[in-house]
Length: 150
Image (cartoon, rainbow, N blue to C red; front, top):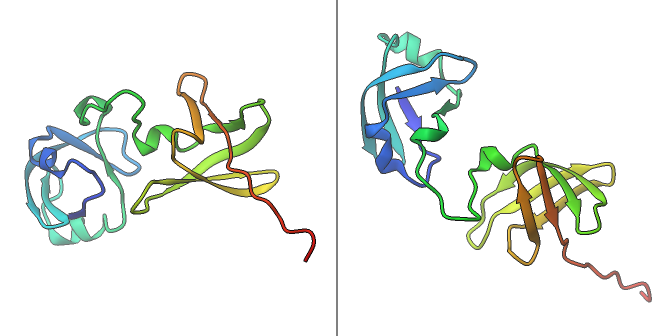
């Protein structure tokens, strides 16, 4: 089956022992893998026909955290951040981190809450703390000034 690569570490794919298909709790053994540009071609245990592979179109393939590339301090995988409660530095709830937009310069975190949608640049001056154990991100949103004299 063909897999669009989302990882920043594609060279690790052929060395994976197993993967999880979306919606499945049990892992599938990775029988073989090769990289072709921005895609990987995988042979998975139990997927033996083209029709079986076609039935998986659009599904996300994931791995155990133990198989993931180690990150530096203050770096996180996107799946660890999605769903975090986001509060400002005074503790005021802003909402939940629901999406991460990758841009050329820095990621942008999409937070949805009772006040609507807030876009936060993933910069150290904005993202003050990430506490995965508490499920919380503390931020200092950039200030936007409205021209009230127009």
